[in-house]
Length: 219
Image 1 (cartoon, one colour):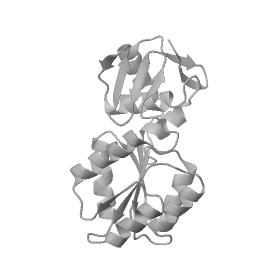
Image 2 (cartoon, rainbow, N blue to C red):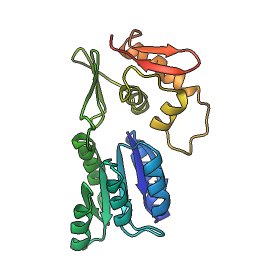
Image 3 (tube, rainbow, N blue to C red):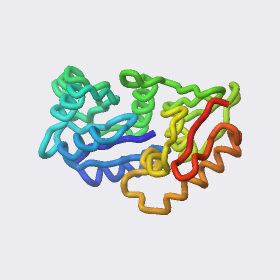
């Protein structure tokens, strides 16, 4: 799953990013509201974690602008410890949930997974392509009802394909889905994960479109 974290406290942002990455999330970070708004507008995220007190553009304004633009990506807002008015305003302007600082990391992860399960507008809880079912919130994959164990990165690549069934998805698009913006390694790493997915799920499901990318087909 791909997460946008908008948080101006760099130490906290780095800690949260590291922890979420360990749980299999691909995390992009913005340190002010203007950059966060731009990133949320230009990229497709499964969930956004948005602090209220941000430089340049505050979290309320970012959330409101996204909703006004028809962007219904689930938003978790981080509020002040005793900010009951913060919490109320966050929900009133379109946030899906809120969490007061300081927060439990375990609770943050659980709530993010719950948000993805609930989804935004037109974002399904599960995706079925042929006899393959992908469940983003639980990071589960099944074929013909049989669960297949995948690593977090394998799942992220598969999810990137499943979101666009029957369409060709390029390596760069899959990298954007499964890795954060700071990744500067070999893009051919995608081939490694595609091979692993084929071994686990079946060689008949993921097609290679030479020179263009990969396509998840109904088997």
